[in-house]
Image 1: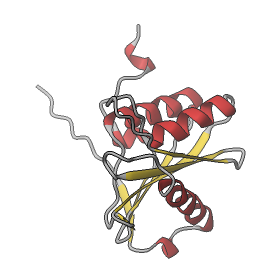
Image 2: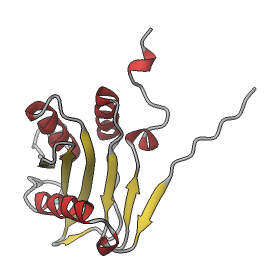
Image 3: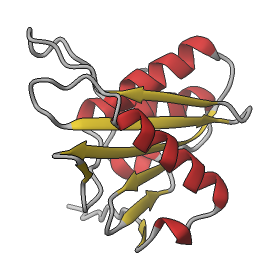
Length: 160
């Protein structure tokens, strides 16, 4: 028997002002997107913004539907739109935040499993890491790549 350890590294910041200008911009665009989400059932608005390597910003937000689970998470809305509009451009980073009861969450909200898989697929597709920025009013968490969020992942290496 062997024992393996899986380690995830998360860099935490106490304030948005500690981030580089480009990361502040992407977080602010995610916050803007969150306020425009369609979440009449959960009242839990999530916003995401993708920064492409060509400098384009693509915003997305959660879109709920009465016929649950027909809605879609903010991360996948943004990522799928970015991949559809710019199919040959790698993703540099994605910022994610949540807004409810007229305020942003105090702690970062991580992406769901399906969104993690989509982030990983995009990372593998372009062979380029995606920086993941999770915004909370009290703390901002930054993960250097999607593989950190999904270490035992299903990807193209699983096919013979």
